[in-house]
Length: 209
Image 1: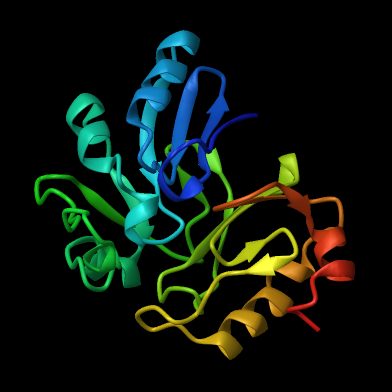
Image 2 (image 1 turned 135 degrees about the vertical axis):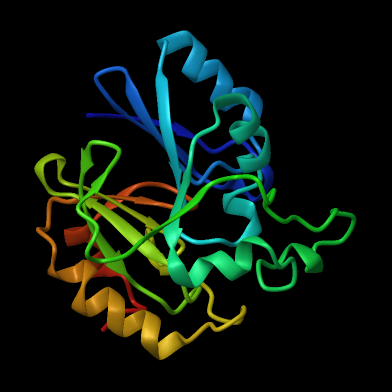
């Protein structure tokens, strides 16, 4: 499995293209449609789906354009669906000069949860880690020792909890009881910033004690 990373976009969201053979899952497409399409075209990738770690606007800014081109479903935790269609809850209402963002109604949205073990042929485990957002999930690929943590866990940091249904205590508990149970050499790919490892965060992340 190969991971392509794009982060040069609005609010420096990390968009990931997870590639298996020539098939691709697109994780958190921020405001970087041109860069996404460039990588897809260059590598002749077959885009199967978009997967959102959560439904804050900066993590799905390219979804409407991407879906027009590829007509693929969006996978998200059930608690995030209302945020896709509500600019106040997905926080885009609060950004000065920005047109509030909602998902096009004709895009197919599929629910995923901790019982989900497969997305379009990609085998994984899903951890529901609310706290930053009610729908926050982490995507864990055991065989490849990778976890995509969205805005739950960053290198030496954690997600903010002052948005819709944020909860600081809940976030810390979920990180400690779910993410920190993973093997130390698991690579952490966060929603913003540099990648890290579970072992490094256990030892050095001052937010989780």
